[in-house]
Length: 254
Length: 261
Image (cartoon, rainbow over all chains, first blue to last red; front, top):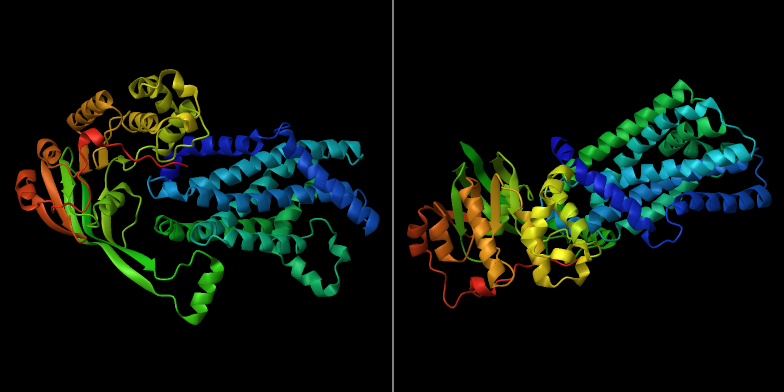
């Protein structure tokens, strides 16, 4: 930990690099962070509101909140795996704390998430949903989501160094997890056989704490908050524990 | 004061006999029970301690465990057994330019590389001009590294790595780069570092260098410490086999390896 603090400037630089490299070749640059979730939302809106006829008032807000959370979660994990793998050669030559790479990647993901909140707020105004004071709770929701995501990133990223196909496997698992999380559908459409499965999906508790202040205009109830925080802390503790164990082995696998 | 204390260090490489780079193959081998490793003990029961300010040379043939030992002391590899206590900041100069991003300019790489070496932004800003001066890159500092010659890249790597007086300096091979004039500068700079009172560990195949610079010498063979004593005494016993199993590199012809990508 003390060592990570010494490398804080490196972490900040890696965050900046992660943010700029992604947009360097794109003419609209950072706008893309805001536009991409909007476009995803638009597609999902057309598909599920018009074709499948979900009965959710203001579905656009519901789905955009879900997409923002999911993009943050899944992209952070895939990128931290790629980032640790991409820099593994370095770890054989320099005593850099291995965790700087997943940490910087997840932090860059947080910046992207915050940027993407701008079009969300615009959507809230345009659709007449309105800006509720409950939005002020979002920093807490994002902190919980970050803890959870960092835990998952620390758990999974060392595997990417050891096995080259893990990233693809995780990609498929992520898709499954997305369908098992009510990102773009309401819980109410689930048949009873699947209901329990989605209900006990730990990712859902994190998502709901993020979506409550945006879509339901409320601070999440204390019971949900407790569950989400517990899930996030457990994921973080598990991630740290397994990363400490596996990080020492990384230089041997390059 | 003891700055480095190694206590019964052993380090094992497990070399999988099968190539298992993928999870799928790993699972298949695991199910078949055919996952076998070749064990290689690169270091076996190595113990010694080094006092502050000592300049210690390490000799030994290829595969004797010299580089592995330096990596354990640098904190890059964690020993399988034993304890390595290192007090103070280690500057490992194992390979110049590790971590260079060839798409970035020299200027951006100075920052990135120094941060990777554990420096802060403030420290880099303070020394930035000195680094550029030493590297003799001039206006090229704002050109992406992919347009550099290998000599230019190595010069920049050396300038960054030696910009700060280290507490503990780890040198794998004498890193001397560039043309004759620049090499002279590198030697001068290394002498300054040696004279600054830093604790130094160096692997070298140039016996002269060890006798001139070191106060003590360690001889490694097959991962074990064979001898610990005066450089002249050890070098008399340790004769590099002739013909040598690696080309003896004259300082004049040496180009420090720079890793691309």
